[in-house]
Image (cartoon, rainbow, N blue to C red; front, side, top):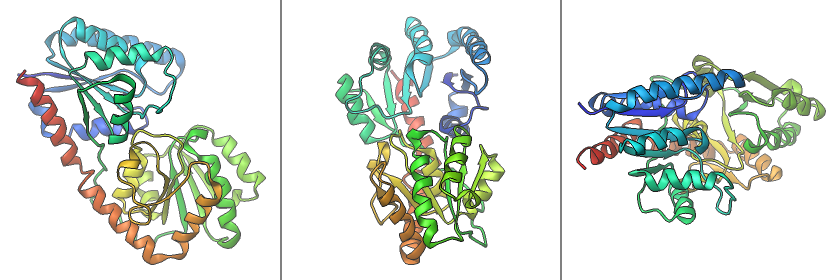
Length: 343
């Protein structure tokens, strides 16, 4: 029986990679290829992270002898390089799965030789978008790259009977995700629409976000629930009227896929893998990263123009159910595993 080791962050870690692996567990390949999740990282203190990594690596050293394929998920290369090194020393088939989009002219510094080793020694390099593939090819001149989009989650019932006048943001609160721009843009929107709310769900710079909201005089219209549970997330996504994702750089953001799966109209920047599929005024309203005026105008358009909002909502759900379906993603992963099995 074939065995695949999936090397990725812990199931307790917040973020998109955990959601992707959980979706893998629903696919046929999980059982047919006897997949096992080796959990390498957890959101805790620095000392706990080191202990968790060492424990994970020891388990990996025991498990890899019986494995046929090692599927390594990279948010950053330095944490996963040792796993790749061992896999190639033991001549295992390897898949390197890149979950970020490298900058077109980014200086990778010490990471370059680590990426180079991992990519050049992988049997398959999986990226999240055509844009990411183009950039990786530019940096490393590879011919073993395959694009596999992440999937939108499924929901049995998500449509709230009563939508609230709320703009939802669901991601880590760090400057690169554009939360500062969103708060400033929302302060402009609020002058015309004082009954609207901004929900900023996520951990990170929560206190800084609250301070900025107070300085702009909009704190009473802002909600900061922190990182939300699955149940809370379902409630907020189904109750909000607009989803905003003003990020400066992305791989392929799970937050946008989540919004599409709830048929939410999305306002976002056209960055990373989103460039592959975003069509302005069809499946999203797009604006330039950092352009607060454009962001505020896009929010106002969706508040005012219900036909446009409904059109974007309907097209978003179609994307979620077709191009970004869980079945499609798992079928493509199954195909990659099968291609390595026969070699």
